[in-house]
Image (cartoon, rainbow, N blue to C red; front, top):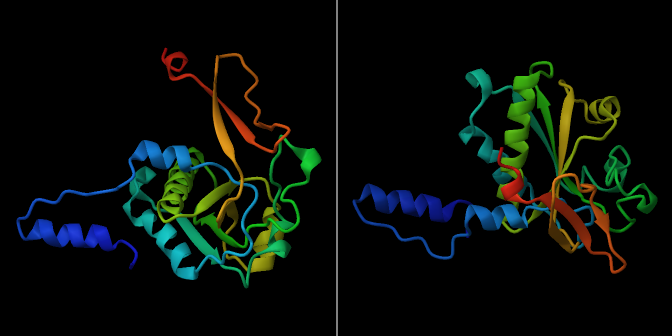
Amino acid sequence: MADNYLERREDALRSGGRTVLRRNTPSLDTLLRKNRSHRAFDTSYTVAMRQLEAIVSVNDKLPSGRNAQTLRFRLLDAPGGGEDFCRSLHLGGYLPELHLPVPGTEPKAFIIVCSTEAESPIVNIDLGISLQSMALKAVEIGLNALIVKAFNRQEIKEALGLPLDPLAVLAIGKGTERIVLDEVHTGSDLRYYRDADGTHHVPKIAVSELLI
């Protein structure tokens, strides 16, 4: 099925004055819960360039500070990504002993996000909105994403011949990890961790304690 078929079909029906009832559409809560940071991927699955383009396509619908729209994107599918590119990234800062990604689980597709302006509070807000929205789009089309901010900027800029400084990398693929959210209280240790069976735990402060 073509990307955005349901949305285009819905628009066509609406233009004809017909009421549209969507079925089996995941809620935002469902997408958010599925939108976990995977650090291991199924390397037998190849992310297509059209999938990367679909993920980046959310950006012409997003709010932007001053509507400046400074973000620009470089797409890397399997021929341009993989193990070599991963050497410039640092994954799992709280789990240095694991040396992630484990060989044979590397992501092979990436979206490198750059900006036409120097980093600033406004640019960083736009960056966060963009990364989260793209990650949610990845989940919507059956993929997973990992936002990476720890990487060698100059190395990546030179290796890809980028005309702009990279601000973040979004790794894309079919995640293979079991990740769970654990409700905790204010003041708890918020570092993610892995238990004996490899399950990845992410502590999240209870909503009732987020209200002030």
